[in-house]
Length: 90
Image 1 (cartoon, rainbow, N blue to C red):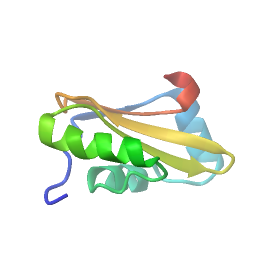
Image 2: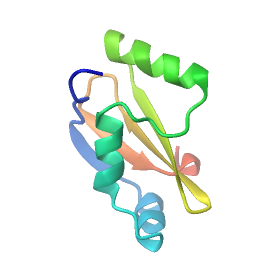
Image 3: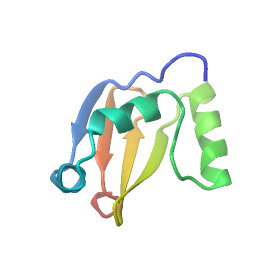
């Protein structure tokens, strides 16, 4: 990716904030990875979907392991909002 992904307004679910806090992880580090195309642990299909999403303005998903949990970051298609959440929050 040549330019950072626009994130829009950034919000997070209480569950995701709790997991990040308990594990001593900084949400900003994960946001930086997401914005620069490091989507964490995604299967090949989801990685290809993200590549298409960047060209076609679809939503972009990242998935990062945090302790025994997983944190997702989703930037909506119109790039107006990015949400940090747990999969079960979806």
